Length: 148
Image (cartoon, rainbow, N blue to C red; front, side, top):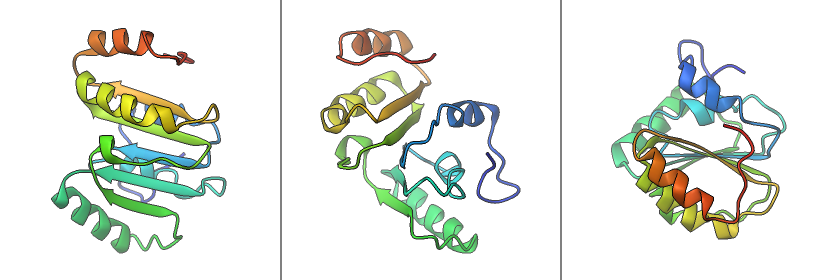
């Protein structure tokens, strides 16, 4: 898969995260920052919605301009100014990426969204710190590790 615009190539880390996608209909890029990971799915016809979530007003404004400048008008991209803990996921078949933050914050987000997910959804995480604490929390939840 390629990113949505030439010149915005994904890093090795984001390419690795992207490789965990397996046909889900809805992409959630929580803490999206530049939005490259989420936007890399824009060309896939099977993806019905891409949700780019970040709490920073500046990040959201830059992202909206970037999308407008790239002429992405397919209607399936949503830019959401919220913390990951505040989002509501009501769709089925979700691939939820939570990356680029600490394990504690990822844990908070997972605990908040997990009750609303069905078995056709998955969460892909990439913590920058507190990995062991996050791992301990995840082991205590009614979820399973598919790939590491």
